Length: 590
Image (cartoon, rainbow, N blue to C red; front, top):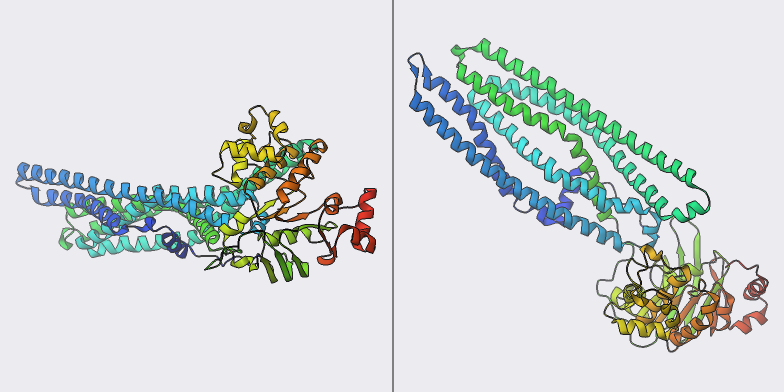
């Protein structure tokens, strides 16, 4: 069974988790903070220089030209130093963000790759792909731009408030009250934005999933004249995505508009209070002018913070989804101290095995059976009888809810993935091909195989005649998902891939069912050579396969109800005999 989803993480816990998983994100943040703080501090010194110049260099006796020139020179030097420090901090931040997000993207995909086949098939591919594309990209863009703005402007706000307090605590208090009120408003909006951007991310994933599915299923859509139904569905999810984004953006714009009111109110309050206090209270013209400069230095960063707040919410939503993916348990973990399968043909044993899919009935119940090493076994049963689940448990695409599946005398859960995959080969009913050549796809069974070894594998399987019909032989491009080959030709490549891996246990999900009848005889002869000396388990959809097996396992409603030879089971008049009779008349559904 698949484990329940993990609890939703908060934004701050998600940030901590991301830094833990990818330390480069948080590496020497203290240095970035110091550089940014220094660059911002020298910018804030400019209003101080203006105040000093106005109050001390300009008076009733005239203008101190030399003093003003010296002050301007100091101000210019401070500006240059501040620019250098700010640039150094920003370059470092952008570099760490890009590197960290690249590593996080790989880490997220690797975790998805380790999840069970059942989990991956239960979610739409577009939603999974969006974790490592759209979600990570949103976080990266925020860190490279929005994060920089948050850091720079946040520091500028704090330093500006500190300098204001040094000038006059009363005027600083007015500005601080305004900032606190505005911060409270932002926090209220933030909660709303978070919900809306979570909705946006969900709708983006939905739209990617539906569009990806439509493109992959284009041949079937056209074959069934379902273009309009498909377009209606695509338009519906895109419309939902538009409204989710519109509502989030609308709320963000409302929040941005409030910053204009804040700027006007704070500026007016400072001017009025400064004029009322006057020089008698230490508010000289220079102090008031410097204060207005500082208010401007404060207002612009706050406006920028508000402007990118909705972007921050989108990035936070994406980060939470990424962390939720990383926190999702790996349903089929490798043992802490994994074992290696013994050499030679492998025996298989199921001991009181039971399995059910999530929230469903038990599909395998109390299955106990032994497959001797080197034997040829066929697994048969009506559709839904549990034979495919039996096969998936055998190659550990699933783990049993109870009982033990043993291969080579070892519990498959204790066997290392490397040992299991190198010794056990699985050929599904529909062979999957990757983009590349025929040779590239065959080499998935043995990455180090040479072209000569690939050709030899094809010759051994009797595929040399077929290869001569290919434009470039084993160098022929198969297209995406093998689209340039027929279903039967794709299966031929999958069989050659299994052969070249030289397995000791071979599991076939009726691997020849899609092959052209003209190749069937040759292929079965090749399969006989492949199976010789190995243990083989074939999920048989055609009972001609069962006729040649040493043992036939018969499943019915999730239970192993019969086991024996083809002749013995037919003579016994049980479930298998009924299936065989239906198959001969063409009415069996397997």
